[in-house]
Image (tube, rainbow over all chains, first blue to last red; front, top):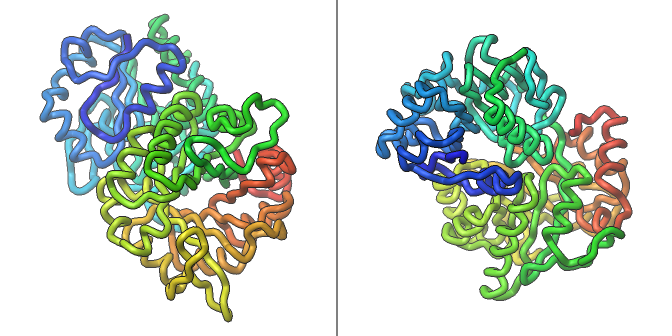
Length: 205
Length: 250
């Protein structure tokens, strides 16, 4: 069973619908025992970094997620949920994140671009991965991005600069885009995550 | 670089797609789930559902429809038509909509834009604007294009973005139904004053109309209804052509 962490941040129903469609057994839950017994934990999220961290803390979920990491349970953060995996964010002032992947969350520099980045962008992979993402388009809605080390960037998109779209640190994976809104490509990525969990294959070779 | 979006628009009444859709492979021409799935297969980048239901009871059916579509179709869904309150938005978003388009209600109650943006995020709030050119000025119309306002469309667009609109869906009433191309001048004027995505609507007839509005007015998306519904053009036809003209599409 995959646990989708329920902490009242935006719409998690569409993610659940995608997992249901793929027949991946899942539960929307904030219960520590359920989360710690799950095969994999999915951290969704829409909205701003600071209230989301606060919502996790209010439900004592920060320590639960730290145990998930320690127990090596595979974890997938999506959109804001991916950003929470990093050490900190500058959105509405400095806020500490979960710190599972090294890096800071920063505002996308405005330049001549429209912010948020909203729409379909083409991914390019930087390290070998089983995720079928290279050259594929996925759907993004975000104003902040993860400024992190290249060694954690599996794939990225060009939006005035490199924006990491798929990040990984061992069994911790993050997707900046919305796989549940990225058509067949997104469904294929979620399916691949399920395969990685089932086969315990998080290698990048 | 973001791909330009091609967006089919579907009119729904009482949870059913109206104005018939002529795809040969559909078993039920009014079933929103089947039609949405077909558009996803064709490569649509997003779907807009415009609720033309006249009663609250029928609107409830639309909410159920959104719920059903979002179980089978995994791309961004925008719902517009008759949305008047934060509670209306909340119900539709919970049912599975990604964005809410408001039109007449935004004119009569501009606070709805800022309240919606604060509660759900700017990216959820699309302001739809129906525009008619009168004596060299772009004028805003409401109530499905039936009622003229005294608002200048360019000024109004600027204002709704300040209030928190994350996207504009702008229909040229002069072009709508003519199939002789999008209103390039209107979108150029809008693009000069706002920095949120603009979706052009009204006038699509041929593939070159799409490349023209992307290349000359730099809009972010182009919406069409009848040319897609009646199979005159497929999403694939449009994408293939605009790509050959140098427009980035998925």
